[in-house]
Image (cartoon, rainbow, N blue to C red):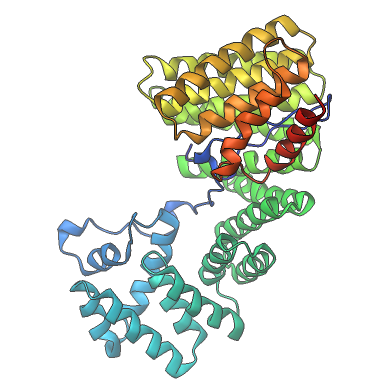
Length: 426
C-alpha cells in the first residue's frame, strides 16, 4: 500500500503468551515516508529535452529514485546548474559518465570542505552510488550545521547498515534543520520508523504522534489533496503500530480506526483500485487485532470479517500470488480473533483454510517466503490449541527450513527458539 511505512505488527496477544503475531510477508519491510509531491515541482518528462529532466534521469539509479529522493535531487540539480565551474560535471552526467562526474563532485566538495557541497554531492549520488553518497553525507553531518535532506538520507543509509542509534541522530539533525511543517512531518516520521525498528516504542509513539498532528493541521488549514490524506493515513498506521509495540492497546485501536477512515476516503475516489483496497484490508486486520486484545470481540469480529471479504475478492482467480497469500494471512488473523473470543470451532475452520491456501501457494512457488511464514504461524496456533494432526515437531520442521535459508525475521526468532524447546519436550 502506498501509505504503508512499517512492517505489519499485530496487537499483543492476551493469552497464551506464546501466541505468535501474524508473520510479515517479505514485501512489508520498513518503507520510508515520502513528503507530499507538491513540495517540489515535478520534473518534465525526459522526452521534452529539458536539461533538468535529463539530469534527473541520469541520477535516478536502478530502480528509479523514489519521489522523495527525486524531490531532494531536484533542488540539488538547481544548485549544480547554478555553478558555472561545474559545467563539466553537468555534461558528464548528460553523456552518461556518472563515475567521472561523481569524482569531480567529490573533489570539488573536499577541496572547499564545504558542508553544503558535501550534502549536495551526497544527495546527487544517493540513488546511483550509495556508498559514495554515504561518505559525502557523513562528512557534511560531521562538519555541520545539519541539513534537512542530508540528514534524512544519511539516516536511511545508517539504518540500512543496522546502525540505528546513529540513524536516529541523523534524523534528529534533519528535524533541527527542517524549515517547514511538511519537512518537520517527514523528519518525525523518519525518526518514528527508526525508533520502531530499534525497539523504542515510547519514542516512536512521540514522533509518530507529532507527525500525525502536522498532517491534521494541514487538513484543518484546508488541504484536501490525496497526498495530504495519504500522509495522514500512513502516520496514523505508524502511530498504531508504535502503540501496539508499547502495549498501549486503546491508543492502537484509536489510531487504526482513524487511519481506516482516511483509507476509506482514498479508496472511495477510485473504488476499482486494488492497491487502495489492499490498504483498507490491512488496516482492518490491524484494528481487529487491537480490538481483540482489548477484549472488544464484537468490533474485532466485524473488522476482520470485512478484511477477509476484501482479501477474497482481490484473490479471485488466483492470478495474483501476493493476494492469495494475503488472504491466508487474513484468515490467520480471523482464526486468532475467533479463538480469543472463545469460538474454537470457528477458529479451527479459519486456521484450516488459511493453512490450505498457504500450502498451495508454497507448492506453486517454493521460494515464497511469505506463504511459508503463514504456514508455520498457523501451525503454531493450531499446536497451541492442541489441534489434532499438528505437533510441535511439525511446527519446528516448518520453521527450520526458513531459519536455514535466512527466511525468519527478527521477531520470528523467539518463536523459533520456543518451538525447539516444545518439540524437545514433546
